[in-house]
View (cartoon, protein in one colour):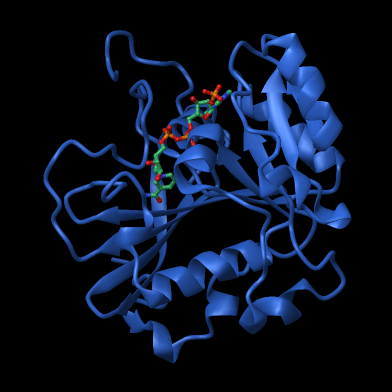
Length: 259
Ligand SMILES: NC(=O)c1ccc[n+]([C@@H]2O[C@H](COP(=O)([O-])OP(=O)(O)OC[C@H]3O[C@@H](n4cnc5c(N)ncnc54)[C@H](OP(=O)(O)O)[C@@H]3O)[C@@H](O)[C@H]2O)c1
C-alpha cells in the first residue's frame, strides 16, 4: 500500500497553488477540471455550478490562473455562458512572467456560436479567443469566426485531439486546462491526451438522468489513473488523479458501447 500525498488533508491546511501546480519544465500537460455529484451527475439543473462550493470555485479559479490556455467544448460555452477569463485577485501573482490572463480555446465543429458574445468581442488582445475546429465546419461560419478569433483547423471530422494540442503548443500554450464538457473530455481521454483529472466530488445525490463527466463511446481498456491527492472541505472531496501512462490510453473504441 502506498499512501497518497497528502491524503485527506483539509484544503485550509495545504498550499493550494503548490498542490495544483503543473509539472515543472517544458512539459506539454493536459489537465481536466470537473465536478460531480456522488452519484455521478455532472450537472444540476443543466449546469455544473450548483454542484460546487466556495473551495471548488477557488480551485477552479486557481486552475485557470495556472493555465496557459483554457480549453472548452462549444456545448459548455453555450450552457454556461462563457466569457473571457478573469483571474481572481488571490491568484494574480501566479501569472508573473506570463500574460495576465489565459485565452479560452473553444472546440466546435458546427461553429454554432454567437460571435457577438463577450467571449469573442471582449477578449483582451493578449488573450484573444481561439476557435478550434475542422475543415468540415461550415465555410461561412469558419470565415466569420476568423474575424473575431484565432482559428485553428485541426484534422478529422471531429477535432483530432493530437492536432489540437500540437497547434496550441506551437502557439506556446503547454499548460492546458480543459473545463469540459463531457463530450470533449471523452474525446481527449479516448485519444490518450489527458494527463490529469482534478475532480471535485460534491456531497449530494441528484438522481435523474444528468450526464456523467464523460460522454462518448466506451474504451476497450479503461484509462488507469493514479491518485495524486485527496483534499477535503465541508464534506466535499477534491481529488487529483494523474494518468499512469499518458498517450497509452486505449484509443480503439469498443463497438456497440456508449451512446
Ligand atoms: N460537471 C462539470 O464539471 C462540467 C464541466 C463542463 C460542462 N458541464 C456541463 O456539461 C453540459 C454540456 O455537455 P456537452 O457534452 O454538450 O459539452 P461539451 O463537450 O462542452 O460540448 C459538446 C460540443 O462541443 C463540441 N465538441 C466537443 N468535442 C469536439 C470535438 N472533438 N470536435 C469538434 N467539436 C467538439 C461540439 O460542438 P458543436 O456542436 O458546436 O460542433 C459538441 O456538440 C452542460 O450542461 C455543462 O454545464 C459540466
